[in-house]
Image 1: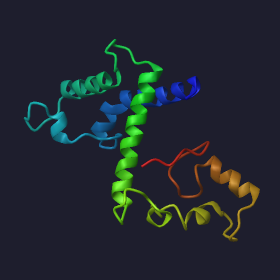
Image 2: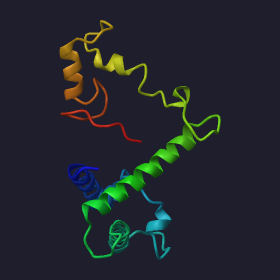
Image 3: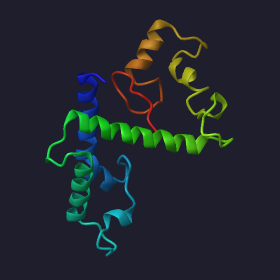
Length: 156
């Protein structure tokens, strides 16, 4: 990996780590932990102290050498572990024949079929350069998310 890739991966992971508390409180955070995982004293409530402890533990898990700081290499390794786990879950979920691999027929189809429809703003069945650029500017076409600007990679 290039240094630029490490930096990008690191920044993304740091944002995820910093946003864990507020995102979990809203219930829409990445890898939202189970309630019982956060409620460490099992009193049926999650306090700010418990949220902070969880965030600290997640940071410590990324800080592989325990020096209290996270390097680009540590962030990249954590990001890679997270992606590997996500991909393993994807295979488990969609591998209908149980061979540990995904064929094209087993791949999720939610984006197929309606991607063209969302991008084709004048509904003529083809994309011209303007429609294609506009779809990319607003994040994959009409009705797809709230994204603005450049397209983002699809994430599970």
